[in-house]
Image 1 (cartoon, helix red, strand yellow):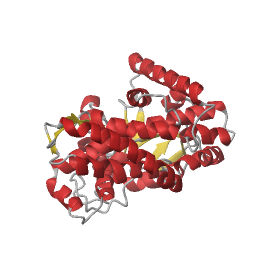
Image 2 (spheres, rainbow, N blue to C red; image 1 turned 45 degrees about the vertical axis):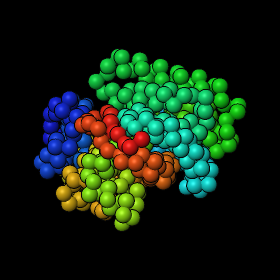
Image 3 (cartoon, rainbow, N blue to C red; image 1 turned 90 degrees about the vertical axis):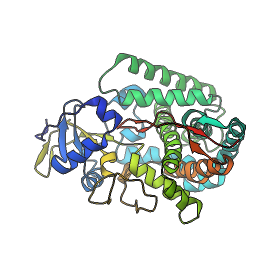
Image 4 (cartoon, rainbow, N blue to C red; image 1 turned 90 degrees about the horizontal axis):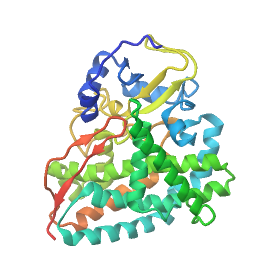
Length: 384
């Protein structure tokens, strides 16, 4: 057990808004054990950026971790050569070249269909009616599971995300996760002999990955490739509408949609935490970590670290976000980052503001989560 100072949290309040608590931790107990989470939290940006790369100490290989137990051991839960071999196998699906030449036109066509169907309605929930299907249709293409419905893709992703964050051990949450992985396996069985070129299912098969690894990595792609883009699309649009002076900077052409997304990802951190297992005992700033301790690298806290970001609680699209850790760092940097940026900044954001004239908020917006964070709903109206 780590000798880190102990900090108690209110789990409900932390889930609703973790940032005040994380700010106090950074200031007072930057490395702290939280009994309610059963983990030691590292909260300062520079510590996280450094320690994430020291995989011989803070290992992603977590045989007893929730993700491995519930979804199988994917490449995100491997280090060193094993991780790199599977990352290399998946690269033909997610490489910037493939994204730009192959996936982008397909993403664009799907998103256009969705926005054109929405346009006459004059109102919607951006999360469920726009961001969800845009993200899901793109993910169906990239995984090769094209016979899933968008709603199924969203549901199985949410089921796995909830399962991986189920540190309270709620049986109903675990059961939903098992149902989600079973449905994915059924679709893999259906499509594995006819998966489309460049899809994750096809390229892993071509690379000779085992069936277990292929299935685990497809589940990883879904768990990381649906909720986060969905929440970032809806969340960035909400942030811009709630801060019209920031939206004006984008619409005038002073900055691009990529700046808006980068700042939203820093400000609200759709991926707020990455867990690690202590593989060998070590010390950081006088705090002792013992083998098999559980550690959470708090990306959401790093992205509001006052040492790197002035006025970190504000949304400012002109901010330099280069120090942010929105997609991780080191060997486990998000493999799907190029696809995510393309879908969000080159397609989903510009299409929404181009096709929905007079787009405006139609109600209050609540966000939820600390490991994975996003808006619960974003009601909007426009001039149909």
